[in-house]
Length: 349
Image 1 (cartoon, rainbow, N blue to C red):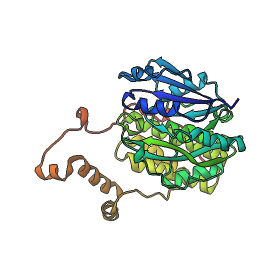
Image 2 (cartoon, helix red, strand yellow):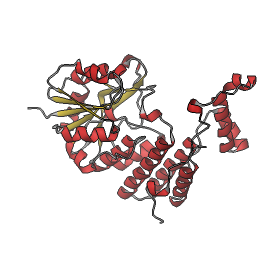
Image 3 (cartoon, helix red, strand yellow):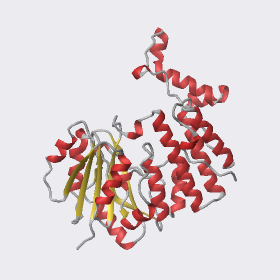
């Protein structure tokens, strides 16, 4: 009997895309799979869509809204597989994705298997698979340093994870929302013997989904992002405390400062303090030629203010002098409810 692979699908208001996702899971060429779909308090027709798939390998569970991390933890507790395939409810797997990675895993037990992936908006056929620096075999620390240095990523569905690594890494952090996958897979990667890349294993990552957690930029989301980055840095430094790892962690925090500015000043201050404790950052703010020119003359903060103003009002509305309020009448994010006790603290070196 081939090893059982558990495909875990957390679902929250994914009705427009869920059928395509389930078809890709049910259509896997690997002969021994179970599919566990947990509906996390959806208020749309997600459960109705899922119920139309009558298949002995598919198990559907409904719960009140708990969040993506808690939903994945529940799915892991239920799953019987020796190997785990995470799959978001709007993403898609190529038919032989699991089969290709299982062939590699059987040759390299104890390793984490990655795969090729590409973005799409409406149809997977739009995806363009362009090789990236992470698309190769690497040691765990080398993989994280490469990913964080170059702004690279590997979305959850691209991985195939042995159960032994799941157990070694521990559960998903249920207090996190934004970037919970980055924090979780940092632990999984560091628990592995290394990463083996399978170029033939393809997955498709849907972009432009307005319900996606990655698109939420609330104060709570930024707090989660900060906590996740702080934990990721702690995990990496526990594995290797060196000049290169301290530098990449400092740059990770500096990038957070650039990304959230001018929101959540308390979190930016915490991040800046950690950058100093790690020895300083070399990261520079990203932007096009106009932004870089403005940053050179005005400083990056004033250049960012100008950029945000233009993006918010638009050239045309600025010229007409029109005032358009933000959604819900909000002028911008506040710092309410964020304290130093809520985020991981660094030890003074």
